[in-house]
Image 1 (cartoon, rainbow, N blue to C red):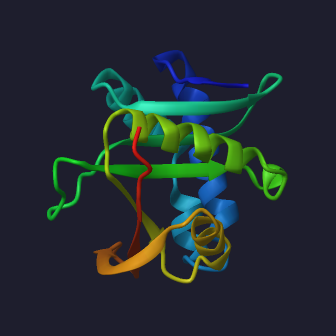
Image 2 (cartoon, one colour; image 1 turned 120 degrees about the vertical axis):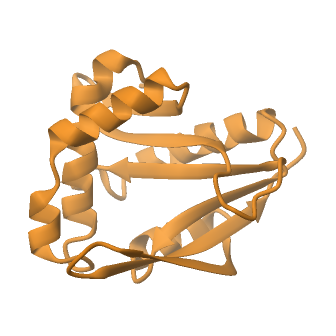
Length: 168
């Protein structure tokens, strides 16, 4: 079941956010960094984001949060007013490859299109081939923009992908 997140969901959001990063990025980011991620801190971040009006959809399987997506206006420094952004889409590894992420992505994309966005952007971790394949399957292409974030012991490079939306 897909539904909007509320602040009551933040503990689960924090837990799934951290665990999904640990699972998805195990071969891409240092284990010491992934092990240092704190679900309580992530839950607090999600609470603040939801209080500020963030659009977050949850995919709930019975009583288990399987995955989530966050989206809204594009936050990039070169963004135009008619650009939306898929800020996050993460699933627990046990749900990879079963079509649930595809369904949640379509719901988020439809919501962005209905909000009038003519283009949707997203950032993907360099080397995350599984995610890149997923986004390409859904029409996203690299647009040449990159960003590198210094995380202390390592740098994390992300590549921007974009798609032109269908008229609402």
